[in-house]
Length: 489
Image (cartoon, rainbow, N blue to C red; front, side):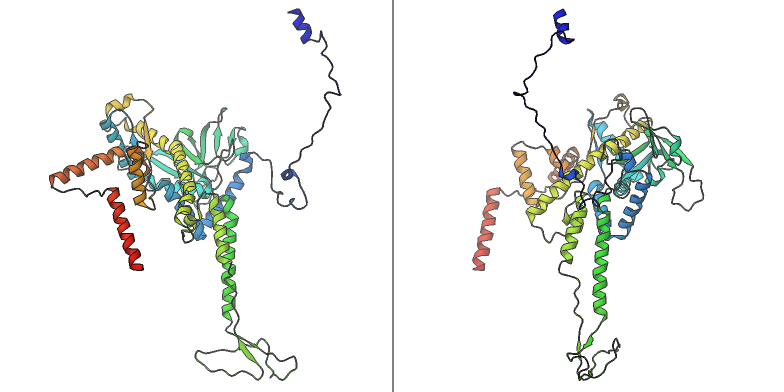
């Protein structure tokens, strides 16, 4: 033991390494992107090392919100892109499927929840929240009580614009507070500050009057791009300068075309200066009438101004600009432009894969941040209403197994999709639940409905449609194709 301590504390000196056996080498590395030159100095002038909350401070978010709203309100492409995104993400609204052990309880809860969702307009509010996230960067909703709702459950969802979630005197708070939000020592939001009146309202009110909303009653939905980010910025922020360029270029092309069209013609002569051409006052204007015969001064000719607008690259420029604009939203060009004329079937399907995956990611985020909290609040209130839900549901606890269904995306070729579904079901690589879920449908509900239809068809002596075997169907297709070829020849 003492020998070991001597070795540790220097009792025995280690052997010296030979300088010849281990030569010292100096390695120098360099990143070109970290070099500042005269060429890239202006490009990287705005690069900074601010924290996420400092980079997206209250003033920066205010400017971005106002500019994003302006573009969406005045730019047709921006408006269409944002509305398309909201419709594709939310659709007609989510549908609940409970997964408890009691099938009767599941159907009852699903029925009552969807009835309440229609009363408060849940789907419409979710679409508004998705538009707000694209324009404002974040969406706020307060879980509140609405006594005038025509529903036994009087829970309501009150949307709040991002401008109202702010703290007028932020410097009085401790460092754990960010504009509009107060956090605890572990980074969890404790309360939100909501102005009683919108700062852009024309109503007379003190701008410093605000309410303290507990975090349990506030839903805050935004995309966190950096660790520790507390507030969101508009989803279309990278595209804002591009939207402005698109409108400016379109107006410039239109102005140039109008200017060229304003001139019916110009007088010109091939004679040299002080030649034999008659004298004409320069910049003189001649009024022309329809279907008239016009004589020109001696030595002068009339010609039309050749319109150079729109240029041949106008359509290509707009296409590339729209493609770059839609990229920050993972949206393909044909969806952003609502134009698939330059696509074939394979490229269209390939571009949509990234877009559809992005939609699934957003829907999963909504389920976790928004829908699960709404369902939990609704169940907590619904179980207190006598006779609305089964008594056994109160024994389940705070966790209720469930899942959400969204609108499915229609296949371009339904025949090919049906054949693929049949193959997957036959070789047991999918289930009816998965196939119905892709269409946003509950498989149990669909099977029950199908059973009712078959029973009614049997009662009315109606035969089901004949299913043509694949071999026979293929033979018929070949016969039609051969007949068309013979006719063409």
